[in-house]
Each structure stands twice: as C-alpha cells, then as structure tokens.
Image (cartoon, rainbow, N blue to C red; front, top):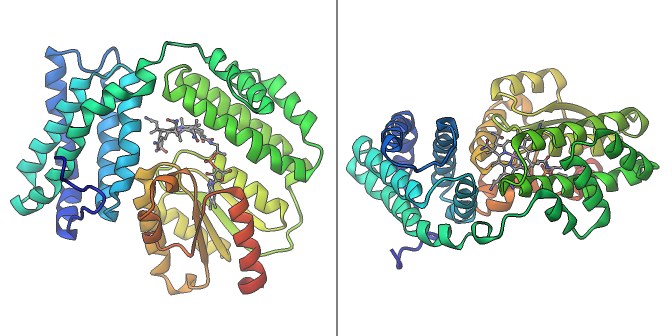
Amino acid sequence: MDDFRIHSYRVSEQAVSEYENSLKKLLAMVDKGMTLLINDKDLIGTNPLSVMYDNHHNHAKLLLTVLTFNDFNMLENILPWVIRNYSIKGFTEEYFSQVLSQWQNAITKYLTAPSAGEILPVYRWMASKVEYLYRNSEVISAPAENAQSLVNNIRDSRVRTFTGLLVTGKHDESMDLIMSLAKNRESLKEIYTDIIRPSMYEIGGLWETDKISVAHEHLATSIVLRIITHFYSDFVYTEPTKGKILVTAAADEHHEVGARMIADLLEMEGWDVSYLGADIPTDDLIRMLDSVRPDILSISVTMAFNLLQVKDLITAVRRKPRFNQVKILVGGHALIHADKARNMLGADRIGMTAVDTLKIMTQWWEEEIQ
Ligand code: B12
C-alpha cells in the first residue's frame, strides 16, 4: 500500500455513480454483517447499535462526497478524527478493520468489476491506516482528565470563563458575563467571533474526547442560542439600507450557530436578512428564493459529508434562469477539509470566517449589486 498515492488518485464518474446507486444495498449489507459479528465479539464497547449504524451512514455520505469530488485530502484529514472519536467511545481497533472489510465485500458484490476495481484501493488505503491511527491517537494514550481541568487550560480568560459556564450549564451567569461585555454592536460582533465561537469549538473538543456528554453539548448550544436571541432587539435589528440576503444552512446540516451569527452580523451591517436556520431541504429553499427574491444566498456547511448537498443546491439554483442574478456565498467549518471540493461547488465565492463574509458582501454591494 506504501506506493499508493491517495492525493493524486482519481475515480471515474461511472464508478462514483455505481457507488451512489448501490449505497443503500452496501449500507444494509455492512450493517447486517457488523450486527452479526457483534453478537460474538466485543467490537463497539457499551455503545448502542444505533451509534454504529450512525457511523456507517455518515461513512457512506462522506465517501460519496470524497469520491464525487475526487478530494482525497478530505478523507486523509477526516479519517484520523473518525478513528479517534469512535475509539474514545469504546470502538475497538478490530471494529475498524472488520467494518472496512465488510465495505469491501459489499462493493465487490454490488458494483461491476471495473468500478469495484477503482474504489477498492481507497478502502484498502483506509484499512492500511487503521493500526497506525488507532495506536497513535493522542487522546487514547492521554490520562483521563475531567472537563473542568481541560477548561482550565484554555488560554484566553474570557473563553475559559465562558466555556466553564457553558459546560456546567450556568445559563444566568453565562448571560451576565456576555451582558457585561456587550456594550454596543461592535463589542457584540467581537463577542460572537472571539468568545462564543471559540467556546463552542472547545465544547466540541470536550464532546469529541468524551469529557462531556451530548446532553452537555446540547445545553451549551441552547444557552448560546438564547443569549444570541436576547441581543437581537438591542443590537442586531437594524432598518435595512442594503440588499436582500437569504442565510441558510445546507440540507441535512444540523449546525445552526455559525449561520445564525452570519445572519446577525449581516443584519447589523444594514443588510435585509432572511434567516432560515439549519437543515433546509433543497426544494423548500428554491420556493423560498422565489418568495424572498434575494440578491445573495449565503450557505453555511459544517459537515464535509454535506458538501454534496451544497453542490446539488447550487446546481438546482443555477438551473433556473430567474435566479441568474443571485450571488452565492458558501462558508463554514466543512471547507477547512475541502481544498479541492470547495472549487467544485459552483459558488461565486467561498468564505471561511465572519470577517470574510462581511468583506465579500461589502465588495458585492459596492461593485455589483447597488
Ligand atoms: C453544537 C454542535 C452540534 C449540535 C448542533 C446544534 C445546533 N443547533 O446548531 C448537534 C448536536 C446537532 C451536532 C451534530 C453533529 N455533529 Co456537531 N458540533 C457542534 C459543535 C460543538 C459546535 C458548533 C458551533 O456552534 N460552532 C460555533 C460556530 C459559531 O462556529 P462555525 O459553525 O464554525 O461558524 C463560524 C465559521 O465557520 C464561519 N461560518 C459559518 N457558516 C458560514 C457561512 C458563510 C457563508 C461564511 C463566509 C462563513 C461561515 O463563521 C462562523 C462565525 O465565526 C462543533 C464543534 C466545532 N468545532 O464547531 C461540533 C462538530 C462540528 N460536530 C461534529 C460532529 C461529528 C457531529 C455529528 C456527526 C455527530 C454525530 N455523530 O451525530 C453530528 C452531525 C449532524 C449533521 N448532520 O449536521 C464534529 C465534526 C468533526 C469533523 N471532523 O468534521 C465537531 C467539530 C465536533 C468535534 N470536535 O468532533 N453538533
């Protein structure tokens, strides 16, 4: 496997299309095969089967995305995270080897030989990385620490305090802290990007390493959303002086805080913002474009496996001549891993941060929309 160059590897459209069309059958076979194995062996610790099925489902979506864009850097970046995350949850090294071999059996069974021949090397490449990634995952060998001691290590004192309050679910104190810092619009913008965003990333790290539960993460998110809502009437709501923007997250994308921040920041700058939130099906979004008729569509995507949804959405919008003038901006956490895919989405521009968004919008407003 050593001479296999994953970065420059390519699979044909035919192979991707067969993979996509067989995906339900592949998944069913992998789920069934792994369920049988789990009866005899401890492969997934104390996790319920649903966690394993969820992983298979996410794997299918991620691989389809990677193969469609031929973006194998994305796979290389995300595979260590997958192995680390599930091993922390109690999945064994053997689970990863077994599941990858189940995928290979299913691909051999359901795809034609030439297409299977193109896709199997990608699976063999993943299988060849399991042992190294599993054994070298820093988190596995780190001594167990509790969430609070990890929070204490956060360098920025405001992020440290806010994260500590979120982790312990202290809604009132979280609100008091932000109220004491939010004096005006400018300070609220800074709070969004320099305190709330990094604190949510810290929450993500604690959750990923199993130091806090999903319930803690949900509580933290709900506190943040309540805080953001509180400030809407004081600082965010602004009489629009600029064009219309529809802000949304992609279909199947459940992360809404980033999109919500982008919506608020744009509204503070005088844009006429319609904010749709997370997980909007493509057909509904098209109907919404017809009713809002925005100058700009801003799409937020956090999970790399949702990049295909973004591409499909943009393709659907571009197919309709009545939306020819609509400019499309895509941004969010998923793009960090998507060097190649980001240029294949069909967007007018890609942005990574809130600052990028404001810059691009100002440029569009001054040069093209007004
Ligand atoms: C809260 C949370 C959730 C919540 C979201 C609830 C909600 N109502 O939003 C829930 C529980 C639903 C969730 C689910 C999942 N999550 Co989650 N989640 C998070 C967490 C902890 C915080 C997200 C957040 O609020 N960030 C704060 C915002 C402000 O940051 P942001 O989104 O990056 O936005 C900024 C920029 O990206 C940018 N931006 C954002 N949008 C746009 C748009 C444009 C146009 C532009 C220019 C810029 C831009 O500007 C924003 C402001 O600076 C992150 C950790 C993290 N690193 O983000 C994990 C994280 C993103 N989740 C993760 C995972 C794995 C999942 C799940 C797959 C878990 C599972 N097994 O089910 C699912 C996927 C669900 C799905 N289909 O979408 C992983 C992703 C890992 C990876 N390698 O990709 C992360 C990184 C956690 C981790 N460290 O492991 N999650």
